[in-house]
Image 1 (tube, rainbow, N blue to C red):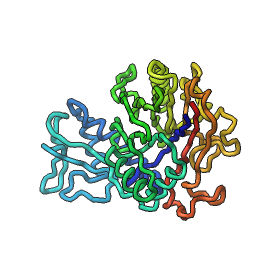
Image 2 (image 1 turned 90 degrees about the vertical axis):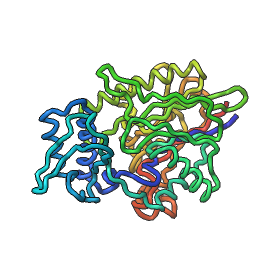
Image 3 (image 1 turned 90 degrees about the horizontal axis):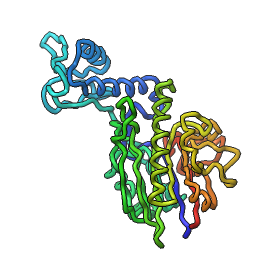
Image 4 (image 1 turned 45 degrees about the vertical axis):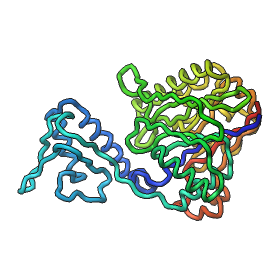
Length: 366
């Protein structure tokens, strides 16, 4: 039985937070940080004077309490019931909510449509590699994944998958992990509620387990992941979060060996193979496909220009699955770096590219 597995960070399919678009720079990162801080504050049972002062400080930046808040603001307030802010006729603003139970609403990042050419090229990359199972990273939600599956892969490339699944995770920005498969999915287990000792949710998105039936009484467990990013800095706190994610994901993968000897953990792990934060993933016989002789040596990276320091996407295999690995490779032509490699003829500018990431694939024969 021969089959191919791949992982691809698609950087959203149809809509993406404006703050995460290319060229957003420091202003975009500020919005991402502010968005996280704002939602952290409003989740509190009671708002302290310091919380209220901070909400008003950030309100000056985005003008949430204006009668007509600017539609261009990178962070926007979505209010359903009650009031968070009050604005007098004289223009004086205050926080009137006393805590989470006194109003209903949240802050969200403004989104923009992804250019159609980029979505088309994302489909072209997926169709070109033609994997039987593909881990999909940075997907808005399951309806979007299915829309891409039907209206892009199916309509444009005749490459639709019969099974597409995504379990919404912890990220409020709409960047989840999903899976598409030509084989039936017989089991799903989410880990969105796993927590670190300090009470923080372990996974930025999720670390779901998908049991996939290959036939002939053989199955494989696929564990998609997207670890904490270095975007905005790689502080000790960020590194500790990513290490906790790797440690828990490793435990999940080892436990999955009870279901099948064939276990694969893959996705965008946002760190390099020699990093301390990813060390727990390479214990007890688990190895990345980079250890196979067929893996590209000249440019081992999976992001940007593919240098070694940009190796951040993985297909990590259990020992028995690693023994069945036949070949592996990287599809880069959806990314626009014409001085380094020749992109697809439909990738003519940076705005056309499918993703800054490259699709990583592996072939097996059981």
